[in-house]
Length: 117
Image 1 (cartoon, rainbow, N blue to C red):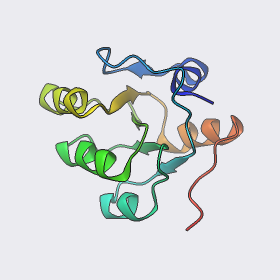
Image 2: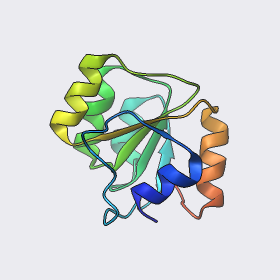
Image 3: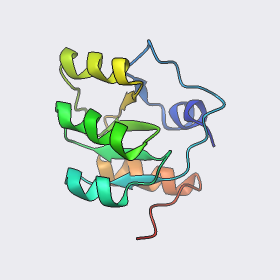
Image 4: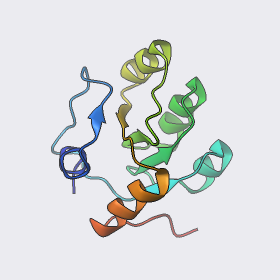
């Protein structure tokens, strides 16, 4: 499944329109955590992070972990400076009004799985 399919099937809001989801970019899995050191240790490369954290470190961790993108749950939206840094670093950001639990459940139903730590 690619980023565009995930966005469309979950009805996600694209927060980085400068980075349209690449239909060739396959999503390898997903991970949910608000503890960024945990994401660094266990987030799947080319996976999606589901979080409610909206600060700059989310972008840095996403780049370092090689994530395909970030979904902010519960209607959370990062500040413009965070969004701009994500664009600069090539990290696609999405938003959902659903809870992290519900977003992850829907990703699981689509066939995405988490890290096997």
